[in-house]
Image 1 (cartoon, rainbow, N blue to C red):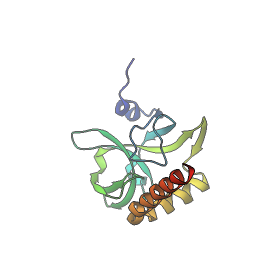
Image 2: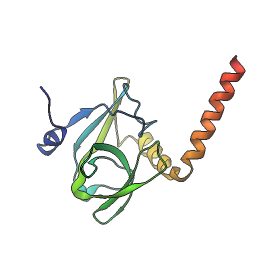
Image 3: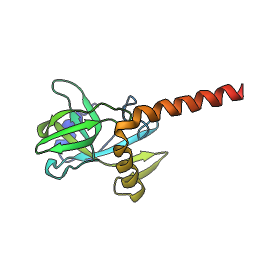
Length: 146
């Protein structure tokens, strides 16, 4: 039986989904990690929260709030440098409450997660440099092991 994610959230259900794609890497690795999501109280959403929203006339997206201006939100995936927005409050469907990695459920209130997500958001302007550097290190390691 196929369930509609938006209907489940609207009904107050807490859902677990498996994000696809790499826009939220390294937080979510496809096939490894799951996101636990509940209906969002838009008034309580703040910077660094991960929300599920529907792009206008398009797909559901799970990204992090970069900033909020009144009822508008600006989002970015953890593996992205471009900010998307404005996303209107009525596009937001749910908010991340926990994630599951290797069978272990980790709350977004976990202090390590809170610190990590805040730091990662701070590095948004230099993420491109970070990813280029890590790719260079991987190539260097590979060449040295051959």
